[in-house]
Amino acid sequence: MMNKQKDMIKVNMHLVEACNYSCKYCFAKFDDHKVLNKDDWMNIIDNCVNSGRVYEINFAGGEPMLVPYLHELAEYVNSKGIRCSLITNGSLMTDEWIRKYAGLFRTIGMSVDSFDAETARMVGRCDRFGNVQSAERTAEIIRNVKALYPAVKIKLNTVVNALNVSENLAEFIVAEKLPVDRWKFLKMCYFNDGCHNNASLAVTDNQYREFVCSNLREFGVYDVSDNQVLYNTASGTEVVAESKIKGGYYMIDAGGRLVDDTTNDSYRSVIDCRTQSFEDGIRKLTLYTDVYDSRYKTA
Image (cartoon, rainbow, N blue to C red; front, side):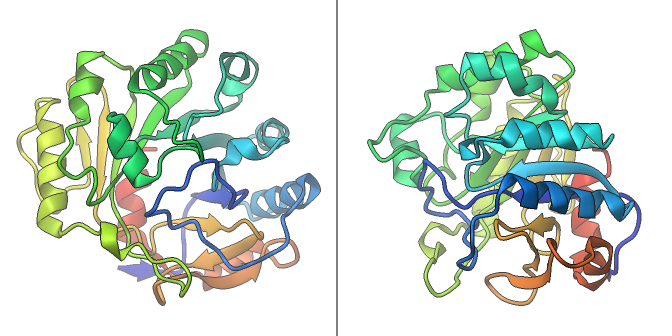
């Protein structure tokens, strides 16, 4: 189902393309553009807020923790009375950063594709020296955030691809009793802009389904439907299984442009959020309401 927007919405702001990791499947590849500064992003935040439609802004990338004024943007979003969240690979999240800034976010999401170091390296989830974040450090970050800021929700994002499709990540999460509030599985989305192509890491629908089933079984969930996206588990972890993501996000790229991913295998610019009305932009954007609602209806 497709519509021209209604109700309150969540906006994903990709602050930067740069990342200290080189994940081979990554879709955050946009056209060349000037890197925006803090004032640009604050103006874009104002544009979103002034639409009267935005209840949450999620900072993403690339790796948003490479942005030196990230915490200032988070403070600015909070000052507007709307929610602020973050999705990061977690590798730059020191204990000092957690103490100072984790409380600015309603949700902190961490991208975790594997708890096996070699698999992570093959995916490209490592720095240029081949260093990966260990499973133990990921667990430590989660526990530290929750200990200092119990109200902050912890979310994990896992992109299911050809290199991790046989891994059961839930075994570690359940064994360690990690306080994960929400865990999202995303079937790797094919992307080809002429320069970047991730086709070699694609998985079939059946492979993705088996990954979802095997991981949900660790949480005691055995009734898995191809049409169901949201699962509530006895441990309290909410699992979201997304095989479709196109047309399911309000996304502003690192150049400040609201982009549409429904027309081809890349992105089409809808408006420049620095100079054009965000409210007008979302009227022009194609959004698949069923995909969006399946993810955010309980957010």
